[in-house]
Image (cartoon, rainbow, N blue to C red; front, top):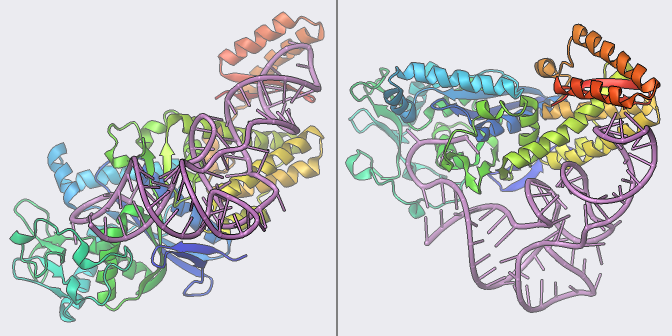
Length: 461
RNA sequence: GGUGGAGUGGCCGAGAGGCGAGGCUCAGGACUGCAAAUCCUGCCACACGGGUUCAAAUCCCGUCUCCACCUCCA
């Protein structure tokens, strides 16, 4: 079975065929760095990280570009609000995003271009568009794209130009048509600006995405991703800008759905309790990632702390199996991807189906552990670990190692001293003393379990 | 008004004509000195009303409810 992906453009799932055999170019709309990331933002990062890991597993050489939009209206507003230079605001939130990505084990992109670093490329693109008559400079310093002049506009969102509600601000502008959009905005006093042949100004409608995708992936590339809400107008405009310049642009458009709260999109829900930085005070990054990975990327996932906790319990069970397997095997666990898991992933990244396979493997592995079937344990554990590694949730991944350390040797030695006393008490049937030791140790956060091969301890969560 | 999506068991969450996804919770059982962990068993759901079919959660018609996008939201 080959990889099939859903393409928003065709509204169908079809076999993935790269433009260049063996290689894949992906452009993901990353953050507009104007606020701290909430779990909806990071879901997008996680979903596309899984896509990237899967493509890499399939043997593709993946070039993954994820931009940072570090200049836009919201950033400027925020700068006024926070009484900071706009560039300090942008950098502050860019760091917040970077922290969230690494906390959730989202691999660094091949390159992470910033909008402000690509003004030259944007000017070049505008020059092309003006030269071929698709864009115009009405003389006030703005540059607009003329949407009526386009052969195909709104093909991604399947809308008709005349059905759109008009912008509202159109009468005061220099637009030829109210639906034309600004590629470039003339400088206003106090705003940052860059010089162009048409006057000083700053980037308009996400011109940077077209310019940067072109710079790093070429005139056409395989996959363009982003959140569902970017379909219109953001991605439509990217297509319009790029195709008008004569570039083939993206072949496949992939959009992740939201994390909702109380049935509504996250940005509408109040409070900042759903910031990544807040959630990871309650659960580990790997657990939050597991939760966000669990729903299909095109399905809305309804956030609740109950659901999060449930998923954590589920994950700890899987992780517990791997830790026990490693202890019994006395060796590193292999990394294999089972056919069933691969089939699931190949079917438009059907993670939920893959989860059922993981559950099966864990059950089989636990049964093998009970039967002391080391061969079976090894096989199941490797398959579980392989699946988890695709999901970016491998507990043996060094990035998570710190939070998984059972404890260092000193703790191990101390716990074993206590366990020896408990074993002695149990041997003389002094269960009251044995239980007291177990309870006291548990209060320190260490869980004692008796197994056929003797007691073992783990850090309680 | 236009465009798109959703409604599945106590909860989360797949599936998209036929042999009960899976997880969590809960209840029983096995194991255990007691636990924990683990395994086994149980809990037969698809918004509503019609229709097509041997067979519908899945297809068709109608209805209701919810959500999103429609010019700077992942």
